[in-house]
Length: 230
Image (cartoon, rainbow, N blue to C red):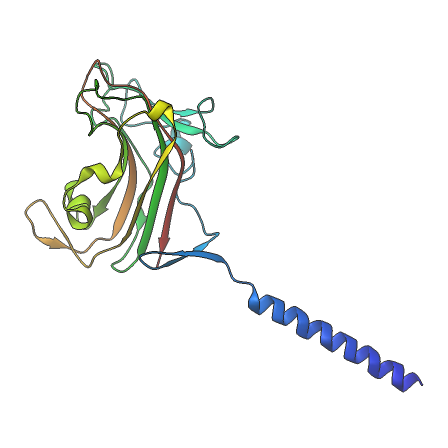
């Protein structure tokens, strides 16, 4: 009788182990597929504020020295508990003539699948100078042996159409998202058109118009994400 119970106990343990093994094998991360495949969850390399320039060293988002126009904003947010990045209009007092906020540079290699995205809120309209190419936008810069021109990314993927990264109008201040989904190319042209092998990228945020302009309005960026999938 004891042998019978012992055999039954061994059988139950073995079945439990096999069942657990089957569940583990069938559990797969959620993935999206466009240019390739990227697994979620994976590290988001664009979380606010730690993955944006100079935050850890200076305690605030900064671009250059002197008066700043880039701030972490906990009042205007898209997701409760997650701050946004606010970029105010450029003035004669600050040195941020590009009216931008840069992320951290990350190493890449040709063939890597990149997804960069952000929600944006703007208060621009037809009366804003430069409309519709104004408001807020995201973009990518490449680095090889030197910083490659900003136009390199847009020329490579969008035929020079910068509007692909823009949220141009306010739509009543509604949050709108833009996504950049691409494969790192084998080479990218430098300012002279010479092919260079990209070794790193940076995600940046920008407000437009970026010159000193009375029609420029404050813009916000929320829940940015950056994934690099080999």
